[in-house]
Length: 186
Length: 186
DNA sequence: TATCCCATGTAACGAGTTACATGATTCT
DNA sequence: AGAATCATGTAACTCGTTACATGGGATA
Image 1 (cartoon, chains in turn brown, blue, yellow, green):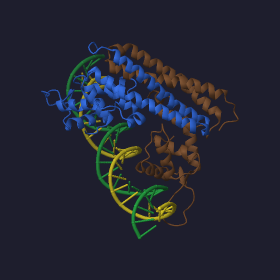
Image 2: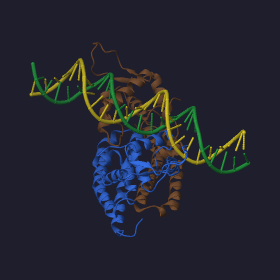
Image 3: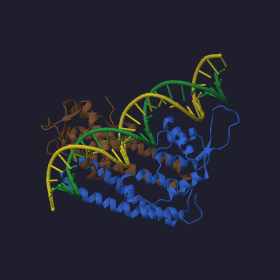
Image 4: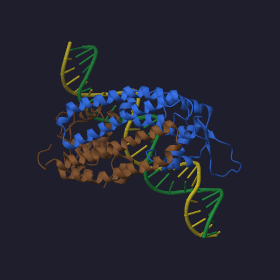
């Protein structure tokens, strides 16, 4: 199981929605809020080159003229296999503690590629981990908090509130995913 | 106003609490939850070297023997000036949209170096920005949400819930900071 | 003295940033 | 034809990662 950068997975996930050019992907990054990827060409084009070199994506068709211009890309069979195996990974403790954003990215692309049961499985694995994490933070804060300066306490509380928000969201999302019938969903 | 990496500011902020060795700083990163900095020597020692070369920190005293061993570091006058000017920066729209974590880091070190009024000023500037941001996300979601697949909606909602949690926290923190008397605080 | 942990350092590598370059297409 | 925009590409630089190296002090 090859490790790839988060940007790589984001590009693969977007290309799984259909063939797109590098420019299309840049536009998506530039216009979608809550997406933290840079839309700079110096990030995206080299990443696409890498994925192409590794055989995960390919140009959709040979351009007739030799010039530049739009160059739509699509997943190869191996690229899709790789994406799917990434999407199927269940949340780990380490990810919940240090990298929730990547976890959410994985979730974002899930419905378009995997059956609803995968979403449920993912969230069901997520839930106890985030609950434990929140509880651990609260224990830490109960002990260390009183000794911290006001702004330090506020800073810690902001992080704690963020984790609590995630926890509530996971529980709600799990209920919703379970309720949603296996068919009818897009 | 020189731009530094977030790690640099974190190190300066920690050293502002008193002289510490690189190893002490590594321990802090390794044992404090919610702190995303790596405790790897390959990150910290080069960063400390950089700060020392730039004249922001210095070894606390010349070691007698020529060997290795602990090497406590402290802020120089210029280092402290630099830290203070960073801490005094007010939140910007761009930071609120893409880099709240750095904003929170700045806040975390504030009480130890600046008067309580600075904390209030910081939070008072933060509040309208995060409120606007949350509202913009809601507008975007009202338009784009219905066309998204279930997991995509869930992912967006998790981000939105996170921003809402920050917004509530900022409002509460601002009330608390205003209520706290100018004296008595640590 | 052998072994472990404390403590600092470095080298190779990967990946993102900024800034610039270049060609194609569309609009006026 | 000129300007703006679409679209891709590259080079220099910075920084963090992993993995390894080194040396001192404490303990068995």
